[in-house]
Length: 456
Image (cartoon, rainbow, N blue to C red):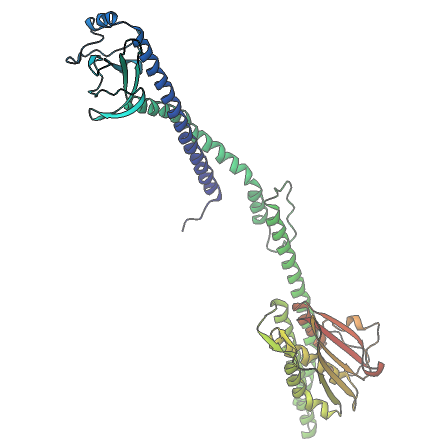
């Protein structure tokens, strides 16, 4: 399929627009010329009629004898002409002379067969199979009436001739204009050509912003959008590299531990030692599987846009998440309490909300104290839905709270094995939905409290 050319489209558009303007101008000029030609021809006919009335019958008879004017029974080949020149218009003006009682006294050789009409003034008549323009004028003294005739085709031909001359002046200008427009469009598109060359000359790893000079205002938004895209790609690649390095580092330790325990199991002489080593291998596999799942989830969140579905009840999702972790809380003797205030509807992906609340609860239960208390609260505010989880465990020092959402960050001295990705996943989901996350004190000034606010 042939690609559309901006240059050709602009050329066609501009030439088409100019042609339409020219056609409109020609139509307007034609209308103006028709009016002017009509007025001039009418004035010439009136002048001819007045001139004829000044001649007496004897002079008219002399003209008739000379073949310039003749009686109605003869139609010589010579036309009446009141000028001796070769005026094409004047050569087609003919006349008739009538008496006061309607008798045709004389007529020009080319005048049509017209009936007597006592009215003076201009008329447009259909005579002898053609259209004629006539002017009648009578002499009050003699009672004679002179009627001057002109074929309407003469005027039309003159108009066509003038219009064709105008077109002959304009038509040769079209190819010249086309060439000038083609060159002008080419110069106007040079910034796009320069941008294309700059991008084509880059290596795959060069994501620096384009540095183009003298960019037109119409092209600037495209250049800005392209630079923003390059910046986002650069950030995405940097995150990928950082993520890959961190993931490799985090997986190296558990995989090495699994390898060591497997070697211990192979070298064990006693069944008890072999069983303990295999159990350690299984536990290591569970931890590594959980870490890989968290890594995959975080990777999906980094590359997905916020999915908006129909309104979902955040309180109902929180209840399900609490039920799933109730067993783990009970095993450690933790009281898991939930406080809601009716339905809290939010346009969001229910899976993402389930992951968010589940990670908040899992983090509180995992790092809380045995026999402690965890409170999950969901409440609706005028413009937000707030989900908060508080515990009364050892908590996090204020100096470290700003880092708990960093990937793979673990609080020192907690004594709990974890991936360090739970709150990172929470923060990424909050970022997707343009919400806010606040980390502060937990219950009764102890432990840790995490509050997430999502716009409703």
